[in-house]
Length: 125
Image 1 (cartoon, rainbow, N blue to C red):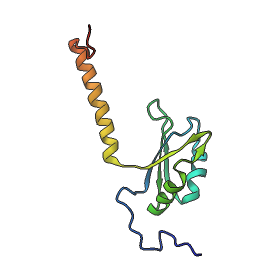
Image 2 (image 1 turned 90 degrees about the vertical axis):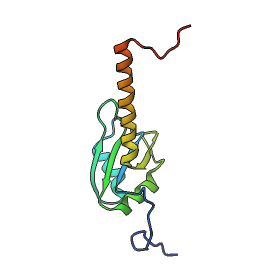
Image 3 (image 1 turned 60 degrees about the horizontal axis):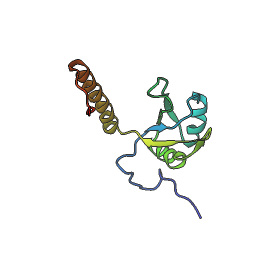
Image 4 (image 1 turned 45 degrees about the vertical axis):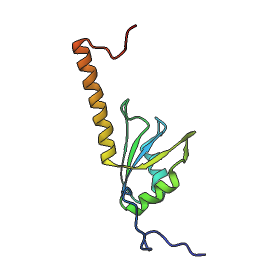
C-alpha cells in the first residue's frame, strides 16, 4: 500500500498549523545539537531558540523551513520521551502567547498597587 505525502496531496491544513513550534517540558540541560538531532529528522530547520532564564527554562521554539515538516514533527514528537520527560509540542500561536504575558503584567501591576496602598487581598478574621 503506497503512502501519499501531505505535500503531494491537496491536503488543507487547519488554521492553527504554522512553521513555528513551541516545545515544553524539555530537560533543562538539553543542548542545541540534541534539539537539532531530534527535530531535524522531520525536515529542514531554520532556527531553534532554547529558553535559558528562570521563566523560560525547559521550553524552546523550533522554526521549520516548510509548514508540512512542522506538522509532521508535531504529529510524531508530541509525547516523545526525552531524558524521562514527555515533550509537549504545540504550534506557536501569537495571540495566545501575548494574552499570557498580558495577564502576567496585569497581575504584577495589581501587586504593585496593593503594595503601594497597603491593600491586602486576604481577608483577616
